[in-house]
Image (cartoon, rainbow, N blue to C red):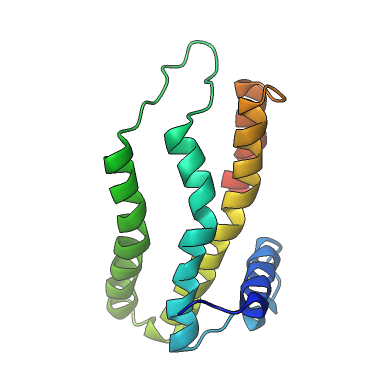
Length: 148
């Protein structure tokens, strides 16, 4: 169930190409049923960002109330987010007769999540290290959330 290094790098590259609305981006994903299940390995690649955010919350901008997550609830939410969203998407795909695109969509969505987590992790660590202020980190995170 663990994808090969080639499949991981190809899928992450495909996710990168999706950011630029590349018509050929989907060719980089394994959109078979096996590739669908292996795409959930992306949760492991996104996990370091999640752990840093939960275990070591970044300083917040002045005047903002800090978020203090419950590690158990946050962990449960992380796991459920990787399970519930694909289930809801499956129901919606059936409802709107888009089942032919479902496997490709979830596969790309999963790998894109792993890709997005990497720059966010870097920004989070830089904020903790004092290289970036909380305000600067927020400004740099904005395009990631808007365009990706």
